[in-house]
Image 1 (tube, rainbow, N blue to C red):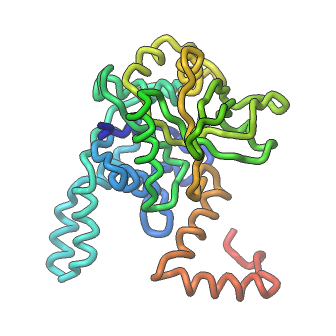
Image 2: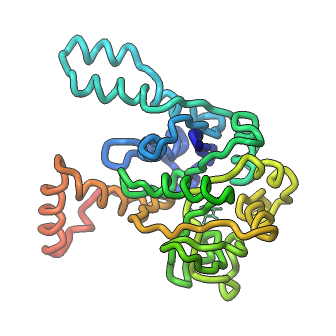
Length: 298
Ligand code: G1P
């Protein structure tokens, strides 16, 4: 049973400076919820209710978001704001949240390794990266967990991208299986230089891993960018026996950079009943005219 997720959230968020000087990147809102809330909700929707944040100094507001906030609850109760009160209370009951500090930013593999004590060598766990949001309510993670429980192998999420974007990601070499959308991954490489891509299948930020990965990570030397990479540890596993790749069949929203973040906000807002119809009508009108883009704030 996979009940625990490791969420690496220790990054400095330098692509979003200056806001990330004081606000963790994971708390930047997509419409009205911090992006990390979508990730925790995805865990819970897929049967994973024990969440371990791998965090860093200056990011404790993230844990506060999933804790009780009694002064706010009292104020909302006094004003009879029941719907808002339920929103605040439900967050604290969503999942069991733990945290561990990464200490030094030595890479994604190193961040995952910080979960070793919580999970142990015999447990299995999910890893979700906060920059990759999936369609809310989707069961993709549950299907990854099913594949892991059926095979005992590490499971990664794969997606096709245009060839000229592969160098931004981990990329995989695969063989088909007789299951639709499921592949045997025979080899992986982290951010291959242009011209050396094994395929145009990239690794999306979802993993389901056996606890034995910790031992592999401990002996994985620094790789791309001088960091300990989960891709390199998985490559070691795949050399013994192929691991499993599941091709993403739900929309993915990339909040990792400014443009992706802005697009995700529009996409999430467009399907919301409260703001979607008006937003779309306004966008059509605005873009239909000679969009007055010069008139905005600096
Ligand atoms: C990480 C992983 C990479 C993966 C990507 C998905 O890279 O190292 O293999 O393809 O997430 O978003 P990062 O975006 O942290 O550089």
